[in-house]
Length: 163
Image 1 (cartoon, rainbow, N blue to C red):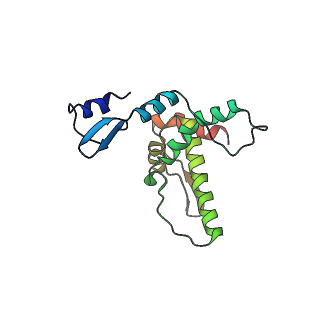
Image 2: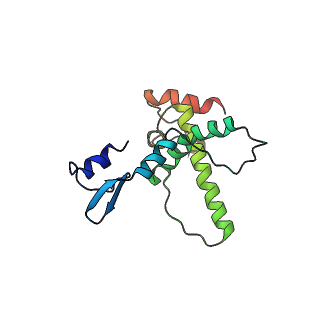
Image 3: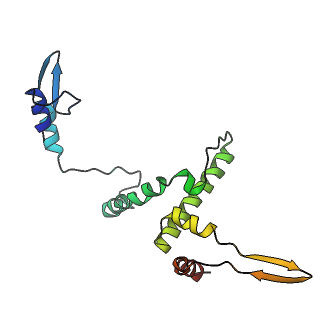
């Protein structure tokens, strides 16, 4: 645990900010207090929530925390994936509406990823190329269906199944 600090204190490693090292002027030594506290807390993890203990069991809180990576992954989507740009709002209603749209887009994006198994960026890029059209020629309406590439057929079928 304190290996890096000891190497710096002995002059075997370059000085960087080291967690367990106490520097006083030119003097470097291990910070035994910090090391002892770290040893005492090693392996412990705490969860803080605003949910009442009576209504939500600890196991449910821990389970929700373990799923947090999915929420974080959603927020790592690039702005270009959703074609989002910074928008500045001053009114509470505008801010609420904007956040609602952004969260809805994130939720839909995550749902589509889970449904198809495709990354959102690839899905959007592939689907936006599909175009179908309805044209009126000499009073007769004609429909031209989109050409769906073979690799996209199963994805389109999956997306259409629930509708």
